[in-house]
Every structure is written in C-alpha cells, then in structure tokens.
Image (cartoon, rainbow, N blue to C red):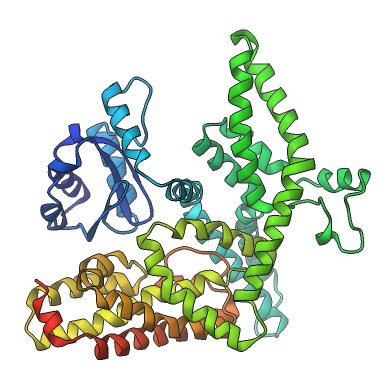
Length: 474
C-alpha cells in the first residue's frame, strides 16, 4: 500500500476529513486533533495495513514509522487541506473544540509537549551533525595513531565533516530560539536573535565590565558566553513572547514594524544579560552536577544502579508523555560534556522490548498463537532498528507483564552502557541504527549493551510469563 492509499484509509477510519481539526507528526507518529473522538473505530484503525499501532493520548497518535509519518502529514495537507495548526479564519466551533481538547492536558504534560515540539523538528539535523562529528573525530584519532596518512585528501575530508557537524551544533542556541518562538507565539526571527545573543563574544566583554567574569576559571563566571545554554534561551524566548505582545498592543500600527522589535529586543537583551543567563546558568550547572553524579560517576556501583534504573523506567516515561522533558538534558550534556551519555542508556529500553518479544514469539509458536506470531514477525525488525512502538502497543503492553519484564531486562544493558561510559555525539532513533551516533570509542560498547539488553529482556520475560498468558492473547 502506498502512502496515498494509507492516508485515505486512515482518514476514512477517523470519520472523514471533516472530523480532523489539525495534524502534526513526530519521528514515527502521525498526530491528529479530532472534532469527535467517539466516531473513531480504533480497532479498525489498528487493522489498516501500514498502521503499526495507535496511541490514545491528548491527541490520537497513529504509528506509521520513520519518514512515512512526515510524508503522510504532507498528503493530509495537500490532498485533504488539513492544517498543521489552527489557522485564522477556521470555523470557530472547530477552534473551540480543539482548545477544549487541549485543556484536558495537565500543565506538566502540556509543558513537556511544548518542549518536544521545540526539538523534534531539529532531530534530523541533530542526527546528521552527530554522525558528521563522529566520523571527523574518527579520522582525527586514526591520523594521530598513524593508521591514516595526513594527506590533503584526509585533511579535507576531516575538515568538511567537522564543518557540517559544527555548522549546526555550534549554533544550536539559534535554532532553539527560532523554534521556541514558533511555539510561544513570538516572532521567530527575534527568537533566533535572542538565541544568538547568548553565544556572542561580546557577552564576555560585558561580563568583565560589570565584574561578573572569573578570569581564572571562566566556566565559574556569573556571566559568560553560552551561560545558561538552551535552558536560558527557552526561558528567554518565553518571556520575549509576553513582552512582544504587550508592546505591540500599545504601539500604533504605523510604527509597529520598527518600534516593537527594537524595544522588545532592547528589554530582552538587558534581561538576558543581567537576569536570565546568570539564573539559568545556576540551574544548568545544578543539572550538570546532578547528571554527572548519575551518569558520569567514577563510582562503579552508582553507575550500575543508575544505568539499570534509567533504562528500566524509560518506557513507562514514554507512555506517560514525560520523555520530552529529557531532550533539554541531552542538549545540556552535549553543550557541557561534549557528548551525551544519557541517550545510550535510555536506548537500551527498546532493546529490552526486542528480547521480550523474541521470548513471547517462541511461546506463541509453542501455543500455536498464529496472530501473535504474525504481529511480532512484522514488528520485530522495526524494533531492532529502534522503532519500538509496534512492539510496545502490539505485543508487550497488551500482555501487561512483558512490558515490565522488558524494562527489567533492559536495565542490564543500561547498567553495562553506563559502566562503560558510552557517549553519543547526538540523539535520535535507538537500536542498531544509533551505532553511528555513538562516539568512535563507544560504538562497540554500545552494541554489546544492546546484546545484553536483548538477552536480559528475553530471559526475564521467558521465566516470568506463562505459556497460558500468551495463548490467551488474541
């Protein structure tokens, strides 16, 4: 079934295009806001060929796989005139229904969802930049050990790869500012400008004028370039959105284009320099310290315990919608530690699901549960590649206990990865597709961690799940 036919089937099962208020996508899911949830037949929707799973949350989320989610959204926009957000001029009853739907979310989940919307569009660039930087570092290491010659060809290749990686990760604050402005309703260009402000060299010079700079240990300065990182940028852009709207209301239309951005940015520059960056710097330093204690401890016992617990509880966090809150932590680690150790540990959760699914497959084969065998056969390759939703929502979660045993088994992989101090240069899909995202010296250890999580999920599930429980799942 091609994407056109898939979208047609999905729209039919959703009650027609008139029932779809808006749509968006993440890496693997098509998210739709509906006018009337009651007319949707979830069972029939799950049965559509190409639909890997359905998640009922504040929005209905249809799992179709990486790449395909974006293509399906594009078809909804072009062929069915479905917007990716509420547009001015939309029917007021539809807008009211969508707003009411949004009000059902808790403040925590709304906040975490907003954070996710800031970073999800950046993930393809984050992945590409991480891979480029990883291979650039590999070439440098091989040249330093004499395994690669220092010829113009290899020097050019290393420079090109590091250029591509640095062009994004070096200016992550700007991209974060632009996307945050989009989410908070501020002018996107001003959001990017505010993000750029935090990484300009003039910040350090201003800090020296006001005695806020520590020349001996620059990182301990009250104010310095990059202080507060993306946390400061997000907070700053949120405040920017409030100030910009208030100023715009009091400025005559004829002067709005000139006065509003100038006054807004002048106020925000002073606020960022003297309040937001120093305070968010304290928060960022605290988070770095906590992360260092948990994920970069020199105590092997702490590493093993924290690695096990983090990998074991990650999938329940995903179900509760709390995983978006981890994205800023990835970025903080990348900014302050030169790599991300939290992502490789959490990636073990998906591997635990794979091991659990294999154990269930063998039990399904033993009990002649052909339907379950078919589901696992289709979902397992995606799980190995790091797309865990089909296994979660089609296998382990419906059975109940395997969802828990998969996490318990994944913990062993998490403990190993943490103990080995595995570091990634970026974050994105998990599974074996994440191997290129690991820093050169961590690729093998990450792969071994996956194998341990596979085995752990398999063994724990095999011993805790009875054959009768698998036979009863239809």
